[in-house]
Image 1: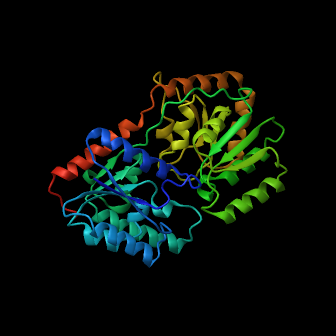
Image 2: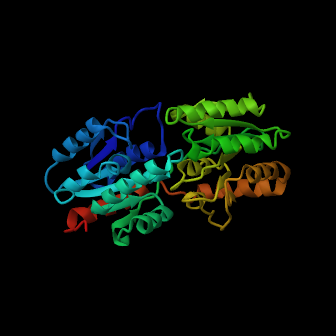
Image 3: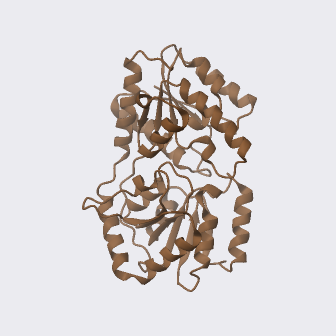
Length: 360
């Protein structure tokens, strides 16, 4: 199996859920009998120039007829002319981490252009893989795809030790690239409404995707008088990221678009309750503990005032806080690992390997 991924997938300075997913399944698919050949394609994805597109075309052209190929959607979806040209020769599956038009900050024309490119690519692929049931259903309805061609392979979660936290209440953690879609500006505004409470908040995530947004976010923190209480830590991986989780009492995420939410399950894997917006695939990531309890608070919208109210409730209601902690620790035991992800993905690839297919 050939796996085509964006260049920089292993760059520790640019961590992302998509990169983590790609790296892990590349390793874990071998446990299901696949010889994975990784191909990285440099370029400014999902807005490649002609050089990057030519690199992708060269990579695919070099693969043998009938090869099973998994393409990361951030590389495949912006280049339908390349994918369509190879769709009858290769057995192509496209893995969609995030629909291109869902990245916030895009102007209407750019979003529409990316959406059209993605639709053409996905209609040409033999199979499409989404990271949640919600995302799969959306791809089917939005792009007019046959449901039998769209599959789900949700991200896994590594086993982790229980977080020790701080005082059990006050350390808030937000993990995600600093972009408008992740909503750190909404979180900062929400925290300004509860500045009387003794919280501190650490924002962990890449700073390079939207430097202008990061600058505005820093200015907002200063403007609202939260300097020293909200810390922009930048990207973290490995032991450094584990340490941030270990010190957290509550995970907070104010995204306005998520296909799943790996940071949520990473927190739950450590028994940390979550406070997130009820959008996209986030409810699936939060899930339920074996006893049916919900290990977090799901907010119906992205209103900073509502988020601030939820934070105040976290501080004020001891019994509710203890219930959330117990549910998070219980949910920890029912999270699927990456082997489950690889098993789901392997099933899709095996079907491609065996079947005669049509991309129509």
